[in-house]
Image (cartoon, rainbow, N blue to C red):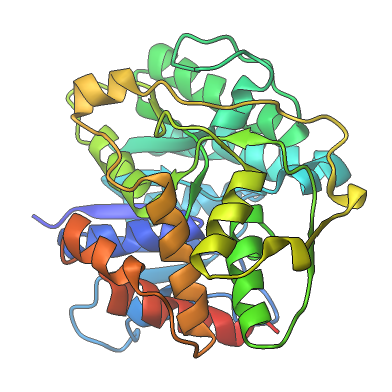
Length: 362
C-alpha cells in the first residue's frame, strides 16, 4: 500500500529535498505552501506534476500555519501516514525584528498540528524540525541531554515546539519526534542565509554583476552539514519502532570567515577585495558556538554524514556558478555521483532546481 506523507514548508530547502526523497521511495506526497502574489514554487518546479496527470503522486495545497481550522481540515482530508513539520520563520535576525510573528508561525504552528492529529483520530507519525539554536549559550559539543539556553526569539519558538512534541508523545502517546538539526546548507538555501550569500556572491562577482557584498559576524562558529543528508535522517527517524529525539550534525566546527576563505579559494578569487563587514547584520545577542554530538543517531539510526565541510562549499559554489551560466571547477558533480544514490544527482537535484530559483531572484 502506498504511503502518504504531508510536508509543511514543501517549497523550502528541506521540504523540496524531502519531497524528492519520498517520491523516489514511492510515497504519495502532499505539500502545504503559502499563497503569495508571485510564484514561490521554484524549488519544486522540476518535480511538479500537473493536477490533470493520472496517477500523480505530488499534491499541493495553499495554506497558512496560523489557521488551526485549515490545518485540522487538511490532516483529516489527507489522512497522512507521516507528517513532516518543516515550515517556519527561520531567519534568526528577522526573529529579533518580528518576535511575535516568529512565535505565532514557528512555535504555535506545532501546537496546531499536534492538536489536529490528537483530535482527528488519524493514525500518523509526526516529525518536528527542532533546531540547534535552542542550545544557545550551552557549551559545545551539544547532545540530546545538553541544557537549552536559547539566545534569540527563533530559538525560543523552536523550543516551545520541541517541548510540546515531547509532551504530546508522553501525555497522548502520539508517535511524535524531534530532529534537533544543526546548520545544514545546499544550493537551495535562501539567498539571505550566510552560506548561500557567499556562494551566490561569488557567482555574481565572476559574472561582473557585483563587486562586493557585506556580511555580519564572521567569527560565529557553526557545524555545517549538507541538507539532502539531513532529510534522509528525517525519514529514518519516523521509520523507527519507537518515537524519540535525535541531534543531527557533523561534529565539525568552522567560522563564517573560514567558509568565506574556503569558497573564494575554491573559485580562485581574493575574498579581501570583495567581502566587507557591516555591523547592521550583527544580532543583538549572538549564539557563540554550536557543535553537534550526534552519537545517538549514529548508534540508533546508523547515520553519519558523508559530505564534509570542503565538499559542501564546493557543491554550493559550483551550483551557483553554473546557474549563472559560468564554468565551474566541477568537484560538486563528482561528489554527488560518488556519495549519493539516484534520488540526488547533479542534473535534477541541483542544476534544474537552481536554474528555476536563479530566474526568480534579481
